Length: 136
Image 1 (cartoon, rainbow, N blue to C red):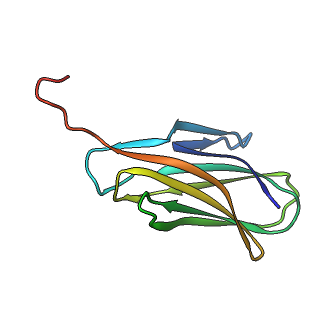
Image 2: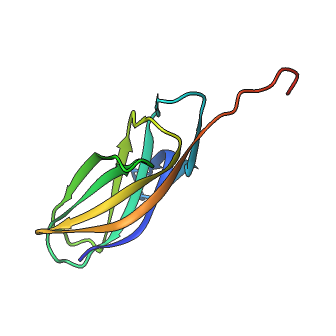
Image 3: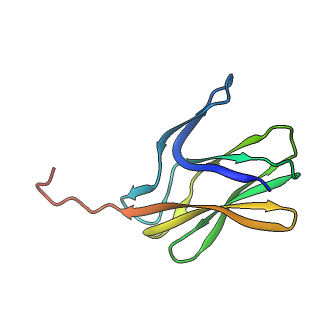
């Protein structure tokens, strides 16, 4: 079964065409919003998987809200390959956030008829407090 090496949320990522190296720009673990509900701009999710040659698999990204509401954000299929490592990158655009609190970005590994939670990344949504008159 494939093994997750890392998963990271960032505002942006760059992948070098020659080396394949990935650069993550401004990692994200919380967002500060002026009002709710709000739509976030694009957020990137970068993952690296160690393969074991066990055949095709897919990875689904889900968002769990503090209230328990769940939504699927994307899914990618991976076909068998000779490589030992495989990067999966997701662009999660326009995520709708309706409440303050701890959200969970959940990575689900699906292989055959098995679905396993590979990782859960926290994404805290905090509502900005209005500034008082005279504060800088």
